[in-house]
Image (cartoon, rainbow, N blue to C red):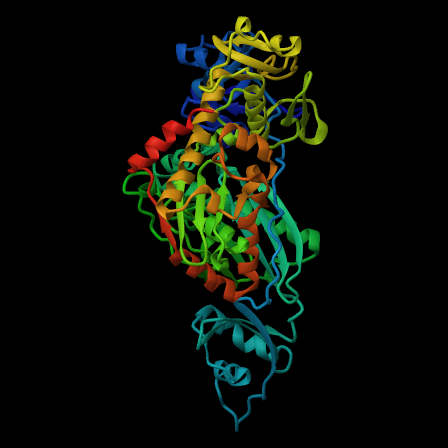
Length: 611
């Protein structure tokens, strides 16, 4: 065994490791967080650590990804190297809590969840009244109910007699016949809670509700722990499909996180797990497959077939969710492999399906989901925007964490702000869009996306000229020149970064144009544009229009930041059985347009690459 000392966040931990262990696998196994957008495939160059000790020379590919400057500082890529001797590893502090959006669209609905609590006082059993316990409960409720759970039948004798035949009955709405899912001694109606979860590829947003009043008691957010297997769904599907053990691991990562959130939120509000009776989940189709522990491999390959897209209402214990033993886990329906339950929830929250005016919903993220339509019909598509908007394929790109440059201003001199007003450590998606928009305005890049040479920049002020540089053989624009304590001496946008953004914004813009043609309408026919998701909420709309992320002709005043619309939709689905039925209607109203085989999309994509 060899000794490995890991320095992270001011702490030092010592481990004994078998020689030959891959460094990235070692970090994963010991829950030491590190950025791995490519899932450890050796493509992104983000798993940077400083290594001290005896070490092999870098391979040509590792050298190309790191660059000579980072290598000279002692940085290596964890995925490329094996631990063979005693070493010390120093990790950059880039894995802190993210600035995750939980606010969404406000909705006012009648509170009538799919689960109901009713207090009953039953006639006592006697020699003259020998009805079974189950029949006694059904008669007391005075409605058509069934009890199908053997587990619950085992609890009945004690539950109804503990408080002298006074009990609270929990039923699940099922149309003409409701199902009994719980029986509690006495009157427990005041303890009635539910939680809604939006499981994103990068982040998880959770909401705790009082199911009696409909009041939201708390919101909480966390990073998705599955991100270590890759920044995008395809990387994660690749990992989960490699073995049943890997599929189980992907499932357990998310359920463990969900249970941690339930515990934390319950502690904050003094609510016990057994008082939570329903959880509603939304997310993209792949995230829902991982939650359900379903094989997702066929989502990744043509013809892109998921196992299920229908609504599910199952016992939460089947998924390993720690709430009331009879509690429900409801998974909202999806449309297709790449239009998920989160999109349906966002449409539900925005009310597009009830409005006569034409609306456009754009969720800008790793996969850009787009919906266009009204109460008559809706069209949808998903564009492979890639993780550029979340910083994954950008040289200094990071998520929305403290120290991320989030807003950039091009005046006489360049200025910027960071999340939390901390020292800059990288650039998040909204900052990247601001930078490229400003570079366009000032002529630092031309309409093709090329960064100009210094001798071409005749009209630029000295501050901007001084920021033009060559970094690792690429034309670059430097945002911050002195960054201490990280693997880059400077924070910059390179020519490669501009191309990454061009690819991402072209995919979104082309998807919108294809849907407009599918619907037979023009850009001027759109009354409202909802920008959903964290990135859509924080982005500068003028910058988005400037770079062509949103098509020319859209009026700025029509564009609304919808926040976490998916989380809002999950919340109203939790509070109202009627809204769950609306979600099913939305699924059936949406016509999915497959772009992977669309020649029209390719043409629009190429045209949208230009600024």
